[in-house]
Image 1 (spheres, rainbow, N blue to C red):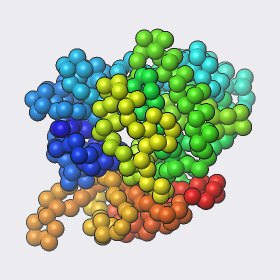
Image 2 (tube, rainbow, N blue to C red):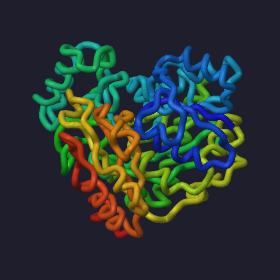
Image 3 (cartoon, helix red, strand yellow):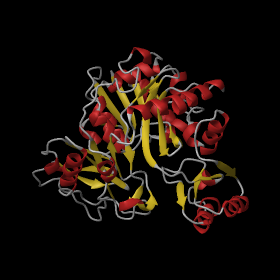
Length: 439
């Protein structure tokens, strides 16, 4: 098979790393890819959102399977266009992708089909939003309706913080059109977890649980980011809880969409808060998480490409793993620590040389997934090229260990061997797993 993976981040590098292990695959292309991806795939200079150039390339190169990493091309209808052209592509349609591209759509769907989530109101007028916030008078969450690269959610401890969040989104337009509407919802308390499943609109196969770390600084302080690290499995997600989430959240969502003639095929990601009243939905994503994927796929021993093909062809019942926990897994925990550029998630500089990568490659049970990197040829050096920074999140350094504590220690030993000017990383990734249980 010839496979095209769309995207340029750490998630896409992890997908390519795993796809390359499939016996079904002969050749991998990446559009546009990144510096690290060049070692495993042929990178094509086409942007992820340039749907018709991607379609032309896939047709010309006789691509057997296209895998979409980021949310933007999915929300723009890339699956619809490829499907119309008779090309096999993994991901939901534009209508189904509204679960992520419109938080208002997702919340209203949950209300209609009684899927557990925080109480909420939707506003397209900032004055009315602030009036509601003042009436509530307690901690809340303000969300931009549209896509905001994982940064459009503000947890507000005071009325003043919530009003400021409304101003930033609706008046100052920091997220552009994504902030035309905002959702103000109750603040849920509990333990967060990420649940990612394959579904062909009828069957569901869950991947291993994980937990993301969204804030930029240790102890969950500072601004929201795309994700500063993750670990898998999440101890809070027991087999019993997984079953409950699938039965009370995943299947009702898929069936609810079906009632509205929207048939969901692909990856469905659910951000969960495990509250005293049970699991509740924080958000839906319509693709693999980033950086959760970097912590999950190193543990997956089943063939990822086979699962994708069966999903597309609506034959998921034929896969191993028809029930929770039946896929083949490395039982060892996995930890991913993201190294970011100084200033991220705000403004940051690029083209900082990255040192130490060749040393990490010699370490056992360590994988480096590149995100914002570029590979540059160099002369007069024993090395043929160097890597420089080219984004906010630069590297996802990932390690497996016999216990979660072992995985954390291995990963941070690797992190300490790499550096670039202004490199930032959280030092507490996985700490919650240590305190919750021994794994």
